[in-house]
Image 1 (cartoon, one colour):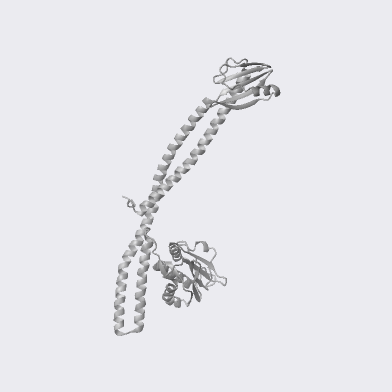
Image 2 (cartoon, rainbow, N blue to C red):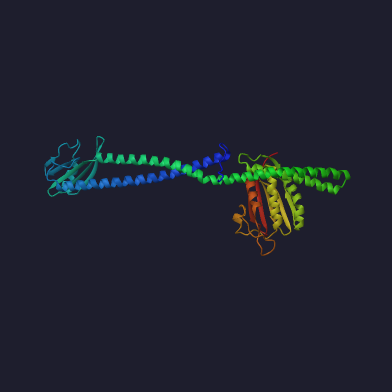
Amino acid sequence: MRWAWRAPKGSPDDRLLRRTALRMGLQSALVVAVAVVLLCGVAVLVVLRDQHAQEANLMVTTIARADDVDDPPDGMWLVLQRGSQRAVSRGVPPGLPESGDLSATAADGLTRDRDVHLDRAEYAVRTQKRGDAVVQAIMDLRAAHAERDRLVEALVATGLVGLVIAGVAGVWLGRRAVTPLAEALAMQRRFVADAGHELRTPLTLLSTRAQLLRRRARSVDPATLESDVDDLVADTAQLTDILEDLLLAADPRQEVPRQPVDLVALVRQAVTAAEPAAAERGVRLVVDSEPVTVSGYEAGLRRAVIALLDNGIRHARSTLRIVVEPAGKQARVDFADDGPGIDPAIMPTMFRRFASGAQELSPGQRRRYGLGLSLVSDIATRHGGSVSASNGEDGGAILRLLLPRGER
């Protein structure tokens, strides 16, 4: 039996799922509403055109066959005028016939059509010359208008029912469509949380053993060994902070804890930790800095700086220069290497997850980018900053991290 994931009721995932499904339902209803309005408009226009054509044909036929005014079709009246003599059907509405049209048509022989509004009623009036007489047909349009109103009411009622059905179906289908995505996101969060939980214990043991080793080293006074062990303890503490930051990033309910961070000190600590790796590759690390404080979470910022240092060391030929300085309301950290630069084809995607290119360590080869830079982009976004890449004027790549400044 297949296991079906369900978000706990009231949880952030459940609220997100409900909001997404509701949004999809509303969008479906909106699409149906637009379609219904268009179809109703087309249907009404077609009906009105047909009614108008039928009315015109009936009036033309009635005028052509009129020998007198005594037996017009239902809902119609006739006026027959020869010279000064005029005959009018019984019951013609008050205010009619249109004497002006009769006189004008008798004079110039032109056919005239008009709609006349009298006492909340509308009448179609056609005046036409036939032989030596002028005939005027008057048609009551109230029946046609009533039919049109019934049609519009039926279309509106049908459209409202369709909107309700479309909205409910959209919510249901939206929830079914979003559930697999929510399941995948939940599994990802559980994986990160479980990894952080499982790694916390061995890291604690590692830190404890390193502290015991430091005590033993002090008892025999080996200065060099003690310094190395101190660095080991500091690295394990930083690794624990990084795991805490991973757990924080995995929980959508948590906001980034903001606090003033000395960016220069953080960068110099990261550079000190990266110097052994840089020395192995023959890369010299140079730091130019001005005092600047940013607002953010130190562990997350350290992750970003370490990732950018690692990227620069891997692609530099001999020197990686790190520049830290204020830039208006932001702090700027540039990582400029003297490597082969960035392939323009890779530039638009290099901060996406799993986007990569070939690594270029010598002329003729290309750079390589993996998951690290996408994590830097995530961290920068969480802190309200950004990360970008460009090629320097003298060659090499420049990765720039911008972060909002803070005050101590």
